[in-house]
Image (cartoon, rainbow, N blue to C red):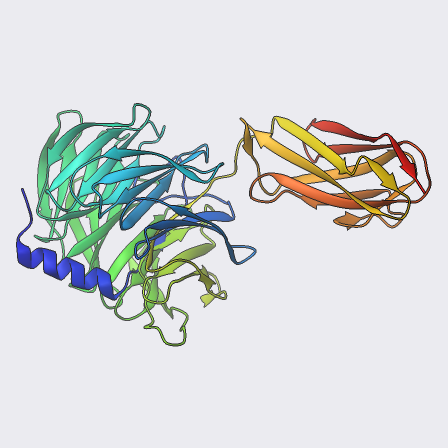
Length: 445
């Protein structure tokens, strides 16, 4: 079933103006948001069909990965190995290998997929298809669609509850929320919410669900025990993205047209504070999507019209400097800390015969399951010979240095030989048992 032409025109106009979303970082909790302490996040760039990898601590974009047409939402599995991107212009999902930073596969789903929610074990996903009024259930291991369930008109948001047996789906075209029994593969009930509902988020406690109503400037609170609407929370103009966390009773709402962010108290279900999104010269101030860190101390907000994301400190209510990304950023997902490193490789030095007084380099690679692990401290120690380290966090006598692995798991240090002779350097990864050695056959004058 195709949406009416006038719905299509309205949706296109809204998306062309800007996008606001609240970033919730990945967690093993229920659907409708992610959570983690990681510093690396993925951002979908709807306007140029790419996925940005961003370091929110270093405040820079590390990589740009081509994906499908008009990427909308993104979620990352609990291992941090794969990201799943809905391509709203291509009716499929991109499977992205986070370690090698490439699109590994595509999975066909319904027409114009929007939000995606992963099961707790990340073995399958639920996808809202706005173009054919359906919900796709996708086997992520087999990389195929398992089945499809009819829902309301122009579905956008999706979240999983009740141990992943029930899906909540927002129907933008009819102001309702569908409750879908995934075991029975059918819609159980449909609730009236606010006008033009976009995103649905569920706090980890699963007591309440929260729906942003773009056309009503409210957030609908749904009691998940009774599956009834409990109340409406007034927020900024045209709320789009939302994230909710139970451990601090905090919610974050990105208000598109008022260009600000509402911070909610989820205990009283009231708006506690409203913070303007950073202003970028020559661009309309907007906020589209958002995510919360695991400790719920910060949120990451995407600014669709200004082509940036920005980190919001929830305690102070202040934004950190924006980070440029691709065109029309929307979806946000954090990459959780990777598993314990299990391999350490050392290459070098280069060249192997180091003239005295000449700088040489040693490169180490830290891996987990053959994937490079970022943000690992590698300590290089002089065991034999006369060398002094020149880069990294160098000890006073130059006999030891510490370097942090980059996004691909590598750490490079430089050194200088002081006297001729054999040199042995040991590399160790902090807080692990991993160690490797680099042996210089000789140094020469």
